[in-house]
Length: 210
Ligand code: ADP
Ligand code: MG
Image (tube, rainbow, N blue to C red; front, top):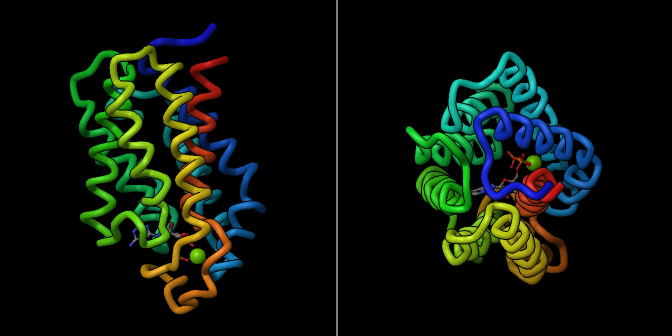
């Protein structure tokens, strides 16, 4: 049954699906990072998601804590640029949901907005630099637009926006992170972190639409 909002235990189940999807996508994410970086993105994300599964296993206290614990687990287990970046996304995003009993499309919009702001403050990248922000920023804009819809419909639209962002990142020239040394040679490949953002929103969509 499609879900229009989630309770804290369903948020946990959704995040466990995100973890399994990222782990399954490790070869694709590693390949994407081999094209533009040092090839470790998939393994880093896999390590982070195994830590998330362990952390969430005993159960979650609240909607806020489900997301923020995910961020903390990634930050403390991953290292590299993406540990800080993806950890901040979930931790800051989760904090924006303090006191909420359920996770709905407005919560999704608030989560992505706060998460993106945290990532931009932490890493200094902006849209167009060919990073995960190029999938996350269009997802944030779409999430604000659909904040009044049922969560399943909102996530369908947000996942599509993230995918379009990842595709658009192919044409960009990297100006942040390891890929910036490639300059124009970075054209043609999608950013690895943007690929991870797509896997994340696809998994969230599939959980709420199933
Ligand atoms: P590392 O660059 O340390 O090897 P990863 O390979 O795990 O880390 O992650 C690389 C990804 O991190 C990039 O594809 C990009 O999406 C993201 N990234 C790197 N630097 C930044 C930044 N300053 N802001 C946002 N995302 C970034
Ligand atoms: Mg790397």
